[in-house]
Amino acid sequence: QPTQILRAGGNYGDRLSSFATHNCRTPGGHPEGYLEAFGNIYRNFALTLSAKMDGKTPTAEMLDFPTFTDGIRGMAFIDNVVASAASDKKWTEYIL
Image 1 (cartoon, rainbow, N blue to C red):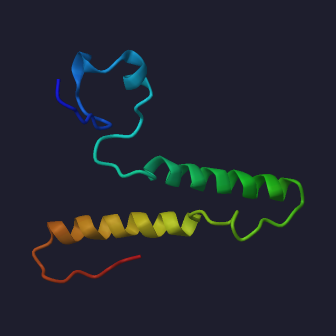
Image 2 (spheres, one colour):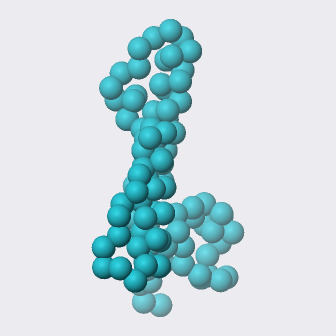
Image 3 (cartoon, rainbow, N blue to C red):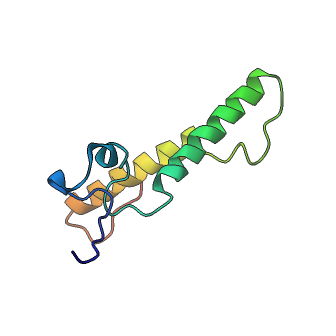
């Protein structure tokens, strides 16, 4: 049989073992580092929380995660994109 390339997230039916499909967490099309990026966010938040609970000052590296304000700005961006797509105008006001 010729060499085959099986990619993560592919619909291979019975061709992969149950162990392989169980451990294949990254959807097809996502680059390496996708899960690690989220892992870093959660780790840094947990390290910051732990440091603060211990009365310590978190390091700059620990503080590398999105803030509440970042989340609000992201949601505002999506709302503005949807409003712009539904509008007949060429330009729409960006509301934050």
